[in-house]
Amino acid sequence: MKTVALYSAAGALLLTTLGAAPAGGATAVPGAAELRGTLVAAVRARTAGIRFGPCDPADVPRIPHSPAGLRCGTVAVPLDYARPDGARIRLTVSRTPATGKDGGRTMPRRGALVYNPGGPGASGMYFALAGTLPAWRRIAAAYDLVGYAPRGVGRSAPLSCVDPKQYGKAPTQAPTHPSEAYKRQRVAEAKAYARGCARRSGPGLRFFNSLNNARDLDVLRAALGEHRLTFMGASYGTYIGALYAAMFPAHVRRMVLDSAVNPDPEKVWYRDNLDQSAAFEERWADFRDWIARHDDVYRLGDTPRKVQAGYDRAAARLARKPAGGKVGPGQLQNAFLTAGYYDTYWPSRAAALSAYLRGDPKPLIASAAPGPGSAAAENGGAVYTAVECNDAPWPTSWAVWDRDNTRLARVAPFETWDNAWMNLPCAYWPAPRQRPLDVRTGPGELPPVLILAAERDAAAPYAGALETNRRLAGSRLVTERDAGTHGIGGGPNACVGAYLDGYLLEDRLPERHASCAPHAEPEPDTRRS
Image 1 (tube, rainbow, N blue to C red):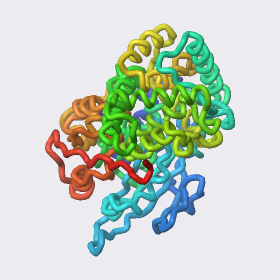
Image 2: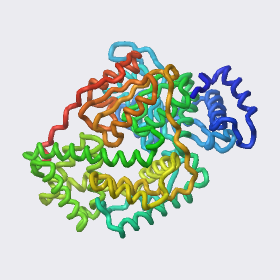
Image 3: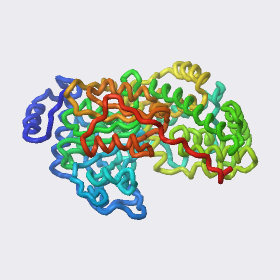
Image 4: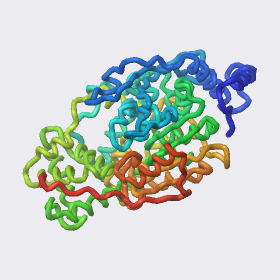
C-alpha cells in the first residue's frame, strides 16, 4: 500500500485532507484514522525531538568502557493512534552518536540505525552499547546506534499480569505427554493469567499490538530527525520491520531483518508457534548428535538415542527431588531450550547434565535455577502475551489446542506442550483481536531489504525467511547453511558479517539468494568434564 513519502510540506497538506475524514471514528478506508494519527504524532515528534540526557542504569546497564556520548531520552506516542489527541505514553530511547572513526579511517555519518531485538517483550535499550563489540565497530563508526523499549516494556508504559514475586515460581513439571488432570490445571492457570492481564493493565491493554509497534517506529524515526528509517530487527523485531515496510514503504532507507518470523496472516501467531515447536525438535536432535559425537568428554552416550535416555533419566529424577530445591523438569527443559537458540550454550549444558547424572548437581543448579521473581521478567512475559494475543484471532476452544498439540507432541515432544502453555492465555483473552496485515510490497515500492537467516533456526524457522523474501519485492536473502543460531547479524560468521557491513556501509546488495557456510561448531569444554 502506498503512503506519504515524507512528513514535510506534503505532510501538512495530507493533514488537512485527512482532517476532513468522517467524524466519530467512521473512516472511508480501513486504518485511515490510525494513519492520520501516526502523521499527527510524527509531526509533533519531529518538532519536539528527543531531549537526551544521562541514562538511568535501569534502562542501560553501566559497563566498563561505556561509549562516549551515550544518552537516553523519551518520545511521546499515542496510546490509540485513532485518537492522537487522547492519552499518550512515553517510550524510552537510548543513543550513541556515530564515532566517525574506523581504525585510522574517517567514516562519513550515515544517520541513525534503530534496533529492535524481538520478543515481544524485549528491550533494545542496550543496543546503544553495541559499538563496544568488535563486530559492530565499523557500523558504529557510520551510524548513531539507537535502541528503545517498545510500548509496554521496561519504563515504556509497562504492562503487568501477575505479582512479580509470584512469577516464574520453581520447581515446575514439564510433561511431554501431560495427563488430563495436568491439562485441567494449566487451563485454569491460563484463564487466571488472562484475567490478571486485564485487571492489572486496564482498558488500554488492547492497544499493545504489532501494528502500533510499527506506528511507534515511524514516530521514533521522526523524533530522531530522520527523513527515512534505517532499521534492524531480530526475531519478532522482523515482524515489526515487515509491517513497517508494508505500511510506510517510502519511509525506508535501509532495513535488515535478522531471523525473520513468518508474516503470513494465516500463521500469525497460533500456527507460527506450532511450526516453532516442530523446529525445536530438529534443533534438539542436532544438539543430541553433537553430544554423542563428544561422548569421550561427556559420557552421555555415543548415539542421540542414548543422550535422550540420559536427559529423560535426569528429568525423572528431578521430578522426584528437584536439584537445590529449585531445578525441576521445567527448569531443565528451559535450560536446554536456550541451547536450542544458541549453540554457544552446548558445552556448558552438556557438562551440567553429565555432572548431574554422575552425582554433582551444582553445574545444573548454576545453569538452570531461576532467580527470584523479578519485575523485568514478569513484564517481559506480560508484553509477550499481550502482543501475541492482541495481534490475531486464536482458537477459543480448548479442544482445538488439545488436538493440535497432542498430535504434534507425538513427533516433537521436546517443546510442544511448554510452548502451548505459554500461549494458552490467548484462548481466553479479554481484549479485542486485530486482523493481521497481509504484508506485501510491489516492485519499486520499497528499497531492497536484507534478510538474514540460519537454515536450522528453531525459534524462527527458515520458512519464515523464505516467505518474507517472497512478500517484500526486491528483498535479498542471505542464508547461513546447516546452522541454527537465532540471530546471526553481528555474530561469529564472517561471511554473514561481510554482507551486513556491505549493505549498511556501502549500499552493496548481495544476489537475491546468497549463502554462507556455517560458523564453526562449538568445541567441548574439557575443563567441565
